[in-house]
Image (cartoon, rainbow, N blue to C red; front, side, top):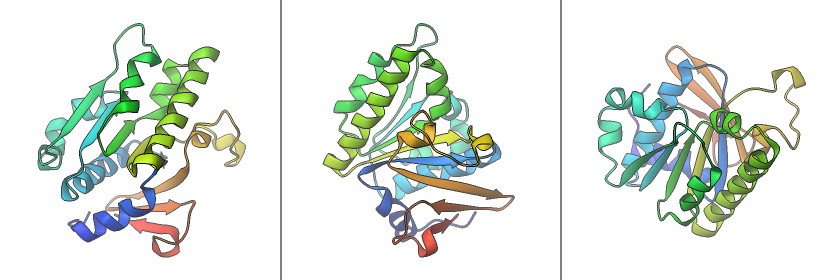
Length: 194
């Protein structure tokens, strides 16, 4: 991955502002590179950041993130309780003054909310986070692993990908990653290369 400049970070973040964006991963190896990239963007843009670490990925890999994480002056990591998870514990996110919320990952959150009531609460929480991002001009960026491969990419109301405003697909290679957006205009051909 090449050295990231402030202009590149700005170009990546610009179309994602004011929305809940889902970065769709297809393999675990892409997660480290993408996480480092998002932390670098936050650092270069001096964005106050919260990471909702639903699967303890950021927490357990913090030493591998190095300067990318330490340079975020007002950053925080939120971990979910080990037992008796209730979505009400995430309500403070709705009143947070942080500019960037990274949710890692939606699959873990979805598995914790698999019963009907909690699943509806998760949908409502994400819709409210999306609304807050629009109203505050902030970012909500979530990662998710592709779970609907058998549906030929079909998105229905219960799909994780349907919970976001914008969908960005990742194409990972050994030394690079291509982000392909469902929107056009800000990135050349709707693509961004890391």
